Amino acid sequence: MADQDWQAYLEAIDQADLTELEALRVEVLGRRGKLTEALRALSQLPPEARRESGQMLNRTKAAIEERLMSRRQTLAESALVQRLAEERVDLTLPGEPIALGHPHPLAMIQERLVSIFVAMGFQVALGPEVEDDWHNFEALNFPKDHPARDMQDSFTLASGGWLLRTHTSPVQIRAMRASAPGPLRIIAPGRVYRRDDDATHASAFHQIEGLVVDHGVSMAHLKATLATFVRELFGSKVAIRFRPSYFPFTEPSAELDVGCLFCGQKGCVLCSETGWLEVLGAGLVHPNVLLAGGYDPEAVTGFAFGLGIERLTMLYYQIPDVRILLQGDLQFLEQF
Ligand code: FA5
Image (cartoon, rainbow, N blue to C red; front, side, top):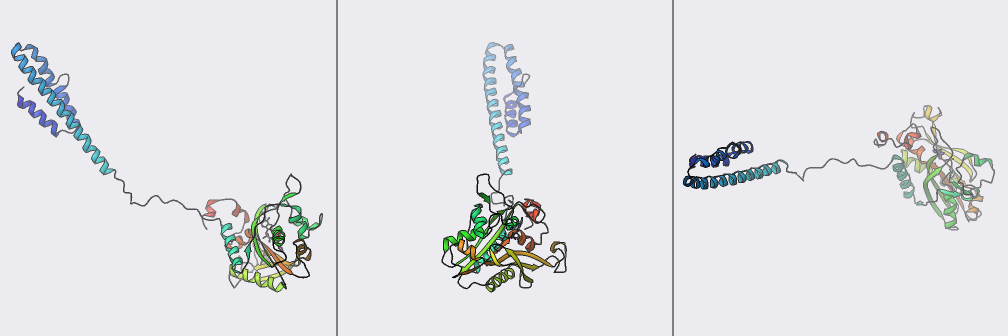
C-alpha cells in the first residue's frame, strides 16, 4: 500500500465519530487489518526491502495508533463538554415548594384569647399540671368527700396525694399566695385532665382561668370584663346572658352563654334547641378561697372565671364535634 493511502486513513481518523473510529481501527489494525496483513507479508520480501518496508510500516502503525488515541480523546472531551452544557443547572430557578406548617387551631384561639385579656391589663400566670389535692380542691373550698368533687372526676397518681389538675383554678391559689396582699389581675392558660370521654368532653383539654383581686371588685366588673371579652372575640352583635350557677370557690356563681352561632338562636342540635351555648363559668371569689390565698376577705374582693378553649374554638370556627380537634387529621387541620 502506498504512503498516500495510509495518509488517507490518518485523515479519515480525524473526521470519524466513535463508531467510525472503531471500524477504521479494525480495518487497519485488526487481525485481518490492512496494516497487520502488510506486516505479515514482510516475511516474503527479500531482506533489504524487508527492513526498509518494515521500518516504514512500523512508523505508520505508530502514527495511526497515536492518531486513533488522540481522536478518541478529542471525541471524549467534546462529549463531556456537550453533556455539561446539556446538564447545566440553573441555580437561580425557584426550588420545589416546601409545605409549611402552622399553629393548631386550638393554639391560634388560645393566643387570640390571651391577647384579648392582655390588652385589658391581665398578666399571664402558669401553674403545674400535676397538682396536690390541696391546691386543686381543698383550697378552692371543696371539702374532702364533698359531693361537688364529683363534678370533676380526676386522674390520681399512684404516688400518694398527687393528681392531674382537673381545672386551671389551682393557679388562682398559687398566684394569690405569690401576690397577697397586693392587687392581682391574671389569666392562666393551660392543659387540664378529667375522666371524661364523649362528643363534647375530652379527657385532656385546655382552659383559661381569670382572676382579679382588689378593693371593691364587684359582679359589675365581672360582667363588664366578660361582655367586653365576648364582643372582642365574636363581634358586637352576638347575644350574651349570665345565668346563676354553682361552684364551691365562687359565691355568687354564674355561667355565661352566647347566642347560638350555628342556628342564629333559632334552636338546633348543637344548642340543644335552646338557642344558647354555654361558654364559661364565673363568680365572685369565695371568702374561704381568699383566705387560702393569703388575703383578708374583709379587706378585698375578687372575681374569677374559667373557660374551655376547645369549646370556644368550636364556636369560633363553627366545628360541631370536639374530637376532630384532637385527632391530628391533616385534612381537617390544613383548612386553618
Ligand atoms: C370549671 O372547671 C371551673 N374551674 C371554672 C370556673 C373558674 C368557674 C373560675 C368559676 C370561677 P367547668 O367544670 O364548668 O368549670 O369547666 C369549665 C369549662 O371547661 C366548661 O364550660 C367547658 O367549656 C370546659 N370543659 C369542661 N369539661 C370538659 C371536657 N371534658 N372537655 C372539653 N372541655 C371541657
